[in-house]
Image 1 (spheres, rainbow, N blue to C red):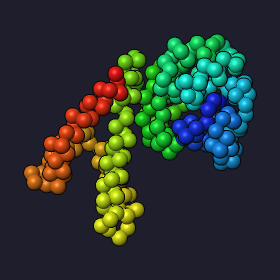
Image 2: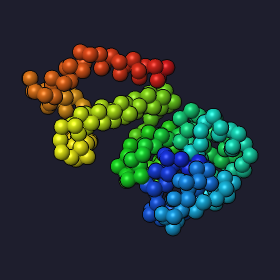
Image 3: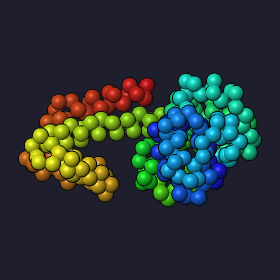
Image 4: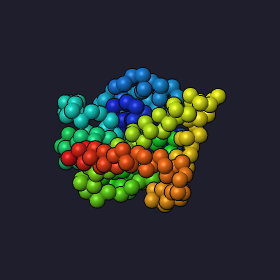
Length: 241
């Protein structure tokens, strides 16, 4: 496909890296010049152009802009009616994107994660999941959402990624003060968590680690008694609200 990216920040760059080498022609905008130039240097099929040139060269256009500035940027650009637009902007729904990118078709809103650069990443979209499947699968997995309310709930729930990383990072720091190779200690914890959750559901994993008096049970109960679950639920409610 001929794919274009308006905005080339960290997340858009990760998407480009994940799509490079798949036979696409990719054009990225000059915004975030350090990212766009690095991509062009790394991949022969990636070119850097102005915003309008990105649109002119593409059949599918990804919007990696800030929702607060998107309308001002897009209002000066001319889309075609044979184009499809996919937005990475959490703060703009499909109706808004449709108005900003007319006469192009607003195909989907999707929230990529950094892991999409390597593949094996979940994709939570609202809109044309068939199009997204053609672009991103089978290297990644598209999770189908029903409506805007589901997207909002998924957006809130995915925020658990940062505190989960904080927990693992803090445990790795604690471990690093007690072992000869701190980097190996962090790699061990990251691998332990990712592989365990990949092969088992959360409830099943908790039960498997629920040996009475075991380290896993003792730490989990200590943190639950300290209010971990209530704090998490309260935080998610505030994000969704």
